[in-house]
Length: 395
Ligand code: FEO
Image (cartoon, rainbow, N blue to C red):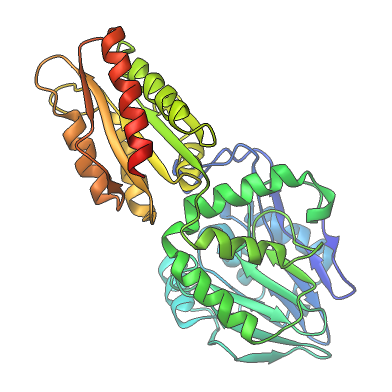
């Protein structure tokens, strides 16, 4: 159902309550998501973004209840990914000549996805579109998080349509940030930043600084996923500046996998040693084969250091850590320390291999790691506690 934001702007998106995985299996969305689309009615009528493809017919049919499609003068495609452009084919089948405003890269991506020669109008930063009483100003945001990404700012109403930036995968019937539990909201915004935007942090800082220089008043930040930032909308911009600056808390996260609990016992003893060394540090322990990968990555994002543990099996480490480390590598975390540990019976290569992977992930690997032969006895557990203490001291 459409929801009015201001006299001129109406939300016409789709709340997807049952979405549990996004980007294939890459991102868990336990709280669902939404695909926010916005209809602007000034002297001209403008549609900003659409919804994910499975909802294309529903989207167009609901849009028809709100407006005669022929009244739409312009479509703005801030981003070509299918969760926002997925209903364009269905929509443009009905209004085929409507101009689609996007970046040069956006036009390439939309052509690559849908193989249609739509009426593209390409724009760049600073270009404006007069829509009557107000104007739309386009701001390119390349690699936030695709090459084509763009923001659109509406004067008069002072709205920043930021597409993926400042979003959260969070299904809710409440439109605004002051109408929901802020703990839940920030947990989802943090997970979204940690898992999607971390590799582009330097660009996030640069882009925010560039936008702030325009000194544009901002009454609403309308992302394309989740809630709209209405109460103190710039709070999420300030938070992004903190997250983008090699964010870390006083936390050490221990992530392990285990076959017969020997490596688990090591993990717990190392954690005890860390706590003995410094009670102010938050220590969290996760079994990578049992935890949600995106939640673990969010914990890594919040940590100043991590320890990764695995027994040696078939001359390597357990596969749940392989998958996790591959994701971590792509996220390019900065200024975090790490080390590896694990039990072994004979060859014992896992710890060395894990350290090599941590190095490739960009962590500062503090030493050669710690191994224990077979199942750790009391003496070995004491050594693990000592290793935990030493790890803290080396940070
Ligand atoms: Fe990059 Fe929400 O799509």
